[in-house]
Image (tube, rainbow, N blue to C red; front, top):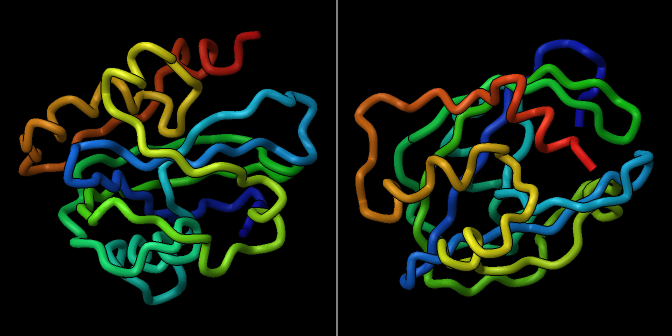
Length: 173
């Protein structure tokens, strides 16, 4: 994890099971003042020389214990700025879609900070997400998820970079 303030490259994945449920990981900032948690899709930094789809495969294993997933194309991109564990991040993200059998094991290799931050993993249906409206990463997940569930994958990745009002809403008490 690199929070040096320099631009970071990251890959994330919308992983779906056969029932079109999405896997989200409950997380919180173990050193932040805001004790509320959020639900996020798996993902993390791209290692030097690594392609985004390879980073997604590695992150699925490290964060969710998923080894056998069909990694699809990059469907979204975003640029985000955030603070986590007192470190400032300026991050470009590539978000792929993937399919798996719906079994997630224990994480296969969390970094120490991730082990402190991550909690429960849960498969969510779109209806459950719409009803609960949890804070999510990406911030605009619920807005852009329905077309993916219908099999409508964009030819060119959609830019889902949060606008100021998305960021303000996410941070609002």
